[in-house]
Length: 322
Image (cartoon, rainbow, N blue to C red; front, side, top):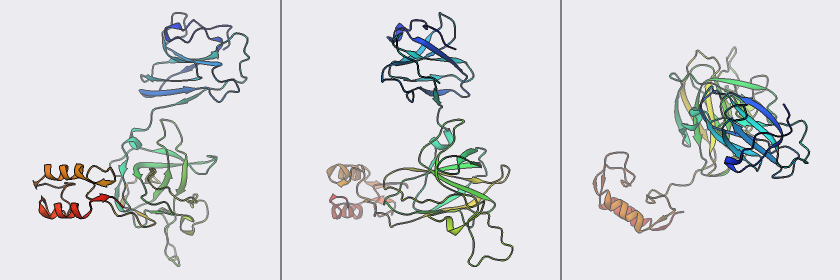
């Protein structure tokens, strides 16, 4: 709906909103939501965006922003009204007027398991989560990963990587993305595979149900190949791995194997992870002196005790980490 002006929202110092458009929104879950209209063809600062708890003249302004976007924490299932309008009466309102809403991130990917280079045990028997995953760069089609488990992998070296669920029990699905999406949103992925693991040559009658991702998806073709990982992963940049089942009632056990270029040797003596071994690390080691139950970062030789052997290793690594 359009009006000449909206109620004065001066409690948040946004002034009067002209030619206001009202959008009703019912949040499906509690959490922080982001409302924006910055994609409009209007000058910066010309648009007002406000979030109201009702549509009446005395409605409370929950949040407003004069730069064309707003963020506000909302309870689930309670309707709010997003008002998009103009700062000046004589300004032309973009037509059509679009607004976007970013919802809270999925808790499953916020609590993603940290994946290591090499082998990672995989078991989704206790998972009931699912997520739609974009199946190409344009998100023109989607695939649904059932009983999804989320992993976070940060490569130590830039280069070409592969991700494998080959050998896992059951029909798997696997995807790689670089953001944690919100409720009701599509995870925009950079690689996806349903069925790709195979022997060479393929066994007669073989069912290729496990997933594998690399630059060619293992050479897989056809409707279950998905799309490969055609870009290098960047060192020290976190990537989200979504692994799960083709069927919603089938659990998978197995191993998620991550392979690729050699990773840098960890600097074990850098206890505070500031990329240099110095007095700060020595203080931490001396503070843990004696019996040190696992896991214990100061136990550099992993023999269950912090002693002279660990001190010798630290002194041998003194200085900048490689």
